[in-house]
Image 1 (cartoon, rainbow, N blue to C red):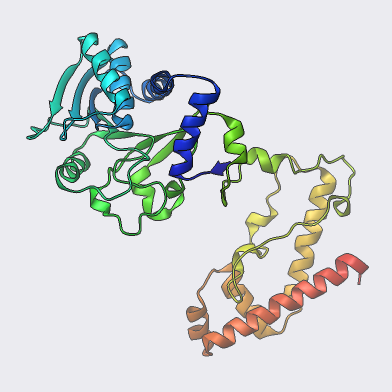
Image 2: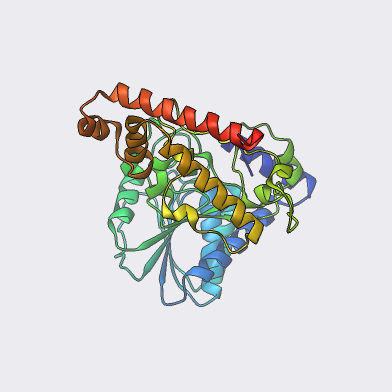
Length: 356
């Protein structure tokens, strides 16, 4: 799956509107339908819905969702923040549609904001700001975000949590970002979703397909991709019952730097011996032979190398801990471990290739 920039996402919307063709307000309606479906799937009508909408198209999405939830018998209260007295065209249209609905408690905030009481039985729909945000929140909007974050309510963010930018958040202000329980991302994930420091901001994220044009996504230039399960499955060759491992190529493992490659090394623990149910008897025999061979090669190592491999790769001790135990330097630990692994790799390859 490709990840494109916030600028490209805007172009994707425009391209879809022009090529489908579809009016911008109708595309927003389509998005709102998917958002509403996702929300009703997770939260039932026992939750009180508090919608916080901004003046742009993210707010327009939120107003449309409020209308649709109300029609499905949810108790909905809407707070539209229009501090500059100007809404986007689609937001204005959805405001008029919401007022026609008549069953939603609506407050338009232009100056002073009297916040509602938010309890654990409230669901906050965050539609303040979306992917178009390009600077940190401050002032009144930052205060609203902090109020929501301090409450006991659950939070679902539309497209992206308000305050979080789609790419670089190096100079952003973390306390001024919505901390969502769930983020409903339109069509594609945002790059910032994949950074560990944003996990508590984004929460669980779910993609919603609103049928934006795939040909634009396919041709868009981007260095960022997510490898998905389906892509890997398509690379795995079907195996016949008596197939030999030599007929299925080689696996390349790319992992840790010099002296820090423990993750990709074969673990000499009981877990390795647990065979998946999908293995044939031949596969089990072959894998058992491989494990036994590695054990044999480890046992043939000099005592110092064998001890360090045991402490590092099996017991998971740090280089410092091993150095303290053996009364040697950390550098000596790393060098000895590297040589041990190289020796096992060399002997394993010789035996597999030539039966030595």
